[in-house]
Image (cartoon, rainbow, N blue to C red; front, top):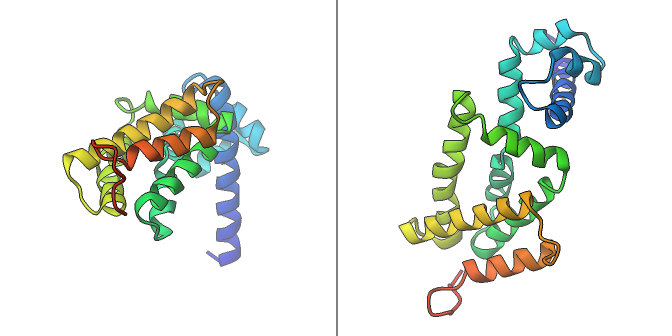
Amino acid sequence: MSPQRSRKDDNIREEIIKAAMKVFSRHGFFRTPVQLIAEEAGVSKGLVFWYFRTKQELIAEVAKRSLPVDVIDECIKSGETGKRLLECIGRNYLRKYRDPVQRNLLLHAMALETILPEVGNTIRELCEEKIVEIAEKAFNETSAKTKVAIRLFLGGLMCYTLRRPEDIDEETFLRTALEILTSNERGDKMDF
């Protein structure tokens, strides 16, 4: 296959995924007919199945992309450590889920953990391996305390994303969360 053909295939595949994200966000994963995704992407239903053998395969791809693994990976690859790493994760997380499509997909994706093994594996990776990786890069240790701190941070980001309070703007939320996260029990700042 020529590089030009491969790029064209990749572009069509991405257009199908983008269309599926929009449609799944509105109608949910299982109530959405593939024909609706095809129409949104401007392709035939057969072409959708050319790139994704089953609707379940397309659902799994969209669900995995809707989880914040990409946000964490991008910040870790940036080389940031300590508080700057946590700030990168927080800002990018809030930016991603400011989009109502992404926010809706996050909710839908979390419900798939027990239904689709590939989504369950991605959630396990997020809640186990990525927690350890963040703790190591942010705090230079992977104690129970630092792993719990990271879980609380990510949980706080999710809660803020899903139900944005009217009285706390993003910047105040993130600044306060980072302040709490980087303080020890006595209120002293942790060294980064």
